[in-house]
Image (cartoon, rainbow, N blue to C red; front, side, top):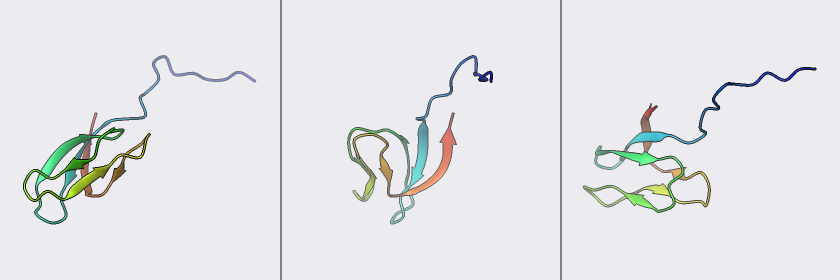
Length: 65
């Protein structure tokens, strides 16, 4: 059985545009962030570092490829 391969593998991580549920401010964050990321306006935590993939606590508006 022959295994099909992609010529260039796609990355598993990406940049995401996340909206704060409290104030509506939008911010671009990395999906595998190594630091907690907060909202610039109200200070609420939007991304929590989990060691690998980050936990997104806000609403993902779109994925930036």
